[in-house]
Image 1: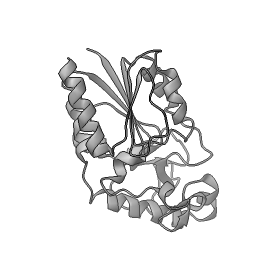
Image 2: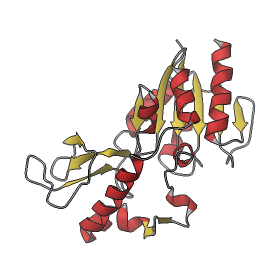
Image 3: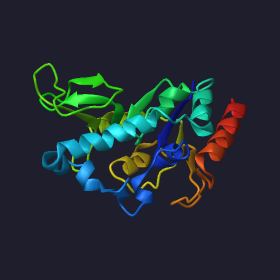
Image 4: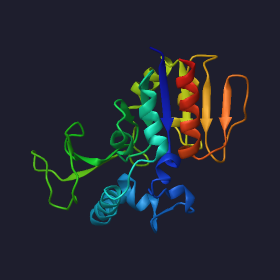
Length: 227
């Protein structure tokens, strides 16, 4: 079975109603991103950070996967699909995708500020005074600006095994995620799906200038027909 590696960004989630800060002049729901998505912001005002992620967690419960997410699930019928997402939502999982690697963490999880390997599922509000078993404050399980991306090495490894690469809803401007394309084997088919593509089409790179809910089903249908 051929391996399809899929790199997804904010564009695929935006169609389901998830807000993206890059479309709002660097503001994320009215906040400077460094206030709510950096270790400095956490040290400065934990309650603001917790409130921000609580609101995002509540919003996530109200939205559903779109046709792009469901098409990627359908791709598993004939391909070994590995999704590598920059998104912290759980819409890929909700759609039924089996193998999802979250580069930037997961909104529906929290972790200990004492032991970063102590991660737990968390669907409700996270408040000041919610402690881990070591009696330390819990924080959102999200990679903030200035922090390492612990899943990056595994993402690189998965990308080196790809027979096909799909890049969906991402500007390919955010590093280190943007570097993953360089780990794909030379010459494999690459599909770039974005309404405002930041790359030019070439021999093995096909650009589909469509939003994810339109472009992903098109590509998946084409790939399933080839099998």
